[in-house]
Image (cartoon, rainbow, N blue to C red; front, side, top):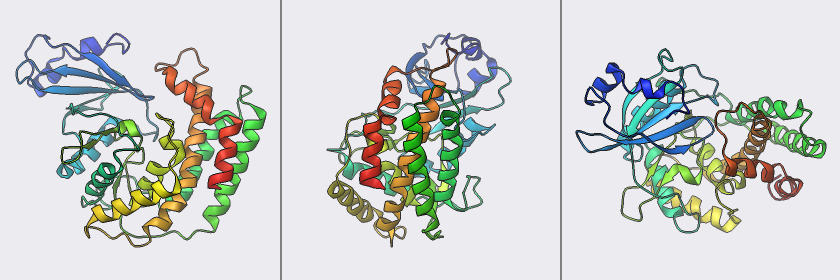
Length: 335
């Protein structure tokens, strides 16, 4: 806990302990479970109930939100009836006592998704989440044109790499060419106003908790939810920049088609899926751009000696995604 200055003192605070029904004196142990690029997650067992909880400490916002942790809490509240997301019990986004947002949610069991075995489970899980009624007035961000919004985000992220003297010249040229082709595609695509719901936008394999067919399976890590169309989520889920992130898998066209068929079957008439496949095919290349430009930005950040969170496996993937061979593959197969 000492990696987050003040966290050990924070969990002693009466407000936190009363809200969680904890004894006045700390007798529970907080163990680091996992760390992402913007959050550190600790697991603890409630000394009274015996339940396991996850203490999530937010260290930054990809969405540039001042209320990042409260935004995540709100999304999980909206989705609580899906049965596919963790229940939340506490949130503090004041930043007064700790300087970081704090969220407590239930700890859920499960292993990461296996793209070769669990695609049917993922289809059902996502369809259940996308079927939850959410409206435009429910407080989620909702870009008017999601394709262009992603491309604008790409431009903002890649500027960090383009402006850095540390960036490789050939990589800069290759990424710029892909971005230009992405903008051209967006100009040829009509914006569509169809069914919208709460989408995750970060569907990495490690964000799924899989327990097997016929059992409870979940989607966690709701840092960047939007009020958007399911095709954006599915495009992210299927894109090579997503599947390759924590594995070495790049889905074949047949595997992509099979998953979309399973998803549409799982939708089971609860929401419209007309034109879904065509929309997903529009989002996949743009999602690739988002992945590459995020990697470019993160690569520069990883060169800074004062970076709070450093993942060795992440750094290796940053190098892989910015390699000339990987960028050539994206250009050939997805653009």
